[in-house]
Image 1 (cartoon, rainbow, N blue to C red):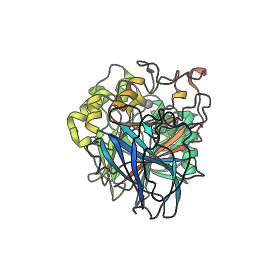
Image 2: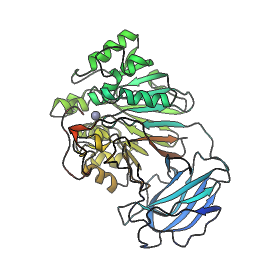
Image 3: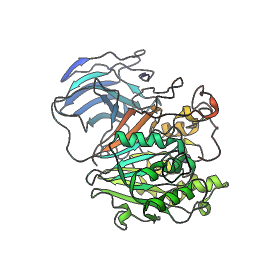
Image 4: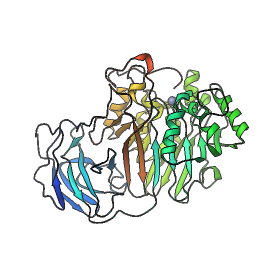
Amino acid sequence: MKRIFAVPGIRIGAWVPFLLVGLIACSSPGEVEQSTQTNVRVSGNTITWNTEEPALTAVGYRYPDSDIWNVAYPSPNLRRDKAFVTNHSVTLMRPQEGDKILVVLVNRLASQRDFLTGEEFEVELTSGPPTGPLLRWTMVDVGFGDSHFLRMPNSGKTILVDGGERQDFSNVDEFLKSESVTSLDYVMATHIHADHIGGLVGNSDSVSDGILGVYDVGMYIDTVIKSHTRFAYDEALATLANRGIPKANIQVGDNSDTTELLDWDEEVYVEILNAGGGAAIGGTSEGDQLNNDSIMFRVTMGEVNFIMGGDSEAPVETKVTAEFGEALESEVLKVHHHGVNDASNTGFLQAVNPRVGMIPIASFETSDGGLPTFAVVNRLRASGIDVYSNDRAEPIGIDFVTTTSPTDGLNITLVTNGDLYEIEVAPSRSFHSLKGGTMPVLKGQNPEDFREGDQ
Ligand SMILES: [Zn+2]
């Protein structure tokens, strides 16, 4: 895995190190174009600084012996309007008192599209983090497909949303084992396409493999009105019956107060925005209609919200935007349909107004590196949304692209205590199968390309 700081890199200008115990040279600082960060201060767990130009900012940090990067964002209270400002303050949520960490400040200037970083420097923290139980959502690296693991802050309940393709059962299984998960309170399939439901039933047509065939599952959450029932859905039903796993349906409007199915944690509120009925919502092909069956839901803990919705395409996004409007506003959005250009429409992005976009895709597992599409990635960037996928993490300017090694995927995790949130970028151990037998040359270079079919 290679790490390359953003180009152009910008040196920290006339700053005054305070409680900084050392400096570590940036790996590729580039040319000094201008001074951008000034008055950098570290007090307790909070880092403050100024930029000459208004900017969106974040703080990347890691432990010296760790290959896991964390990106801490300003509190939602400070960035509710996602305003570009010159005075910045970010409180780190997890490092403990006395911890020594390596820090890099990230500034996205209003006048420029690129992310600009300063030099990495070491900080010894003088006080512990804000306390509080943590909610975790991991976008598990399944290469091509969706699989999301949620762990609730107080109840400890575990929820798996989708399981990747059939061949990804082993990837999801390995991830869950690494999290010491032996049972799942809920399994939800957003819709029945093979890259979402496949890993739930596994490689064979047996009822004894896949997540549903192996793990103890408390409840399978389903939808009522499906546009079509094909692919592995029959096998999923057979597996549920064979193992005695109960199944229950949710629908639009259901939330944590109205149904036990969504009563995941005393501090977490879940609401369903879309669920089934894709054929009536829109889409010209069966594939489109199945995508528009996707369950879309919003999760809230304190001040932090996130939305995920399978492969919902523009018709669902338009419908949800009309129904919920500004109430959709969330810090983090799971970018729908793997970054295909038939989703992530502008109106929806404006309503959600996220700071972070998580795209479940690794470009090297697409047929020609065409996902996420250039158009979608650029739309996200232009909207001030930081892009993370299973092979890239843009905000800290670190290039994780691995066109020569498909063993280098990423698990991306949102961690929040309801006040602050961080994105964790960790190497995955997932196996990737290359589509089309060749490695893509460069991803995101073909503006209109997207794959048709069972996505
Ligand atoms: Zn999909």
